[in-house]
Image 1 (tube, rainbow, N blue to C red):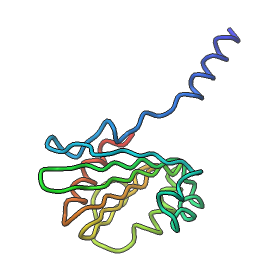
Image 2 (image 1 turned 90 degrees about the vertical axis):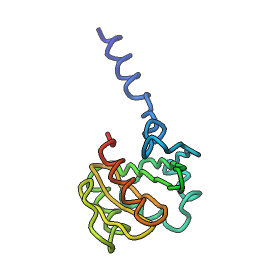
Image 3 (image 1 turned 180 degrees about the vertical axis):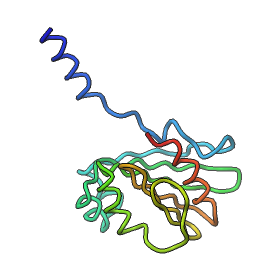
Image 4 (image 1 turned 30 degrees about the vertical axis):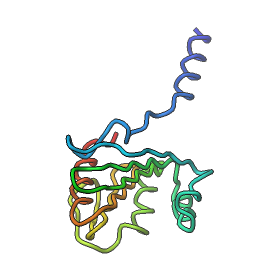
Length: 144
């Protein structure tokens, strides 16, 4: 029995989360152009100058997906902040201003960018016009 519990703990502890953005896309006519993942040790290589705020709020992991649609491209950043408190913390830094975005636990958008938090996640969607807000709404229902 002890051996079974030890194996179960080992398997559960070592299993990595499957990348969320590789399983999702904004719509049927969109395709994935690239995916990247970052942890606390290499976040500075993606957002040099802004990583300190994320780390201070409890950052665990970042997935970045670039998607190409019929006429445009969006970049989606999903930050696992470890807890809803961590997501709220970083949303207070980056999610201020703009128009309310009714998605997730809290969201805002401006032309070219949408920001929301949902559970332990903070999400940024960057693109042109209103597209980021539409993509953010689509992703919100697909977060674990």
